[in-house]
Image (cartoon, rainbow, N blue to C red; front, side):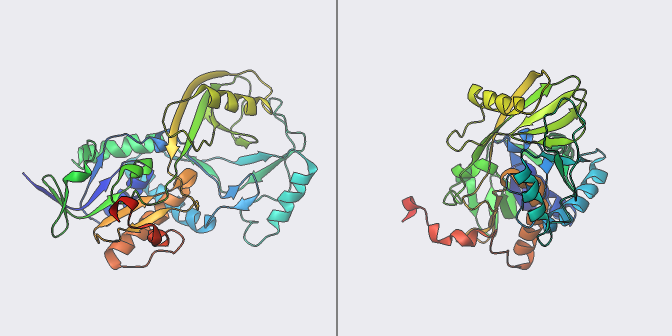
Length: 356
């Protein structure tokens, strides 16, 4: 028996869920196909933070992204009936007077004062080394991406909208839409994360992929409820548990944790954490990052009903909601995508070498 839907979504990570939500809220029918081969959303720290803390610069379109994402997640929380969004202050340890000066220089820039607190905070946590005080980033928090995925997938299963299998590209056929086996659809959206590298329709796009590794530690006596950033992030989980991350590796594209990255995280953590801790868990995943650090969104050059939503990198929590809406309007209403996220900026790379 055949199934007819408006959309097939390939991938059940954060990007796929965001696009599925755009469809659900507009009463479009859809089916999600996923084999769980990409786990970047599962191992993500889930932080949303408008400021790049290394250089005190605003992330790309940070204000617009946050203004859209926060109501989006509030509605999603109400729909799923679980708390996925936690507002948590983020503090950057300042390591020298020059960093204090750099903070104020950045805060003087237009639009920055919204996200950068005036003044510094004296460190009162004896477990943290912060001789030159701490600076607070405003409007930050943590999305529980693992809980979001598990809860949303349970909903999809209850609606018979999730097919758990590896997508086979050679089964995709084109005739008044697309067909995949017995599934017929008007459109297909690929939101596969780093799996895009195996996608014959979009593997020409410069998705590099960056491996990230995180630790879960137990640290009794730290008693910290805020996110602390120095060489790495300390993200409170509760019950003396903290997530520590993350690494950035460009050559290794596996999801296998490595001893080298574990030691790197431990060494960076010990530079400012003065208490003993125990490593409880160690996970890894490949972020879908792009050469110019912008998302990959748009429609295939030759197939008008084949689309991509990818390249969210390490800021998918902020970027995912608004880019998924932009793609929806692009498909349904032919609205142009912002140049900086449209795959048209890489049109010169099409066709792939083996198609020439």
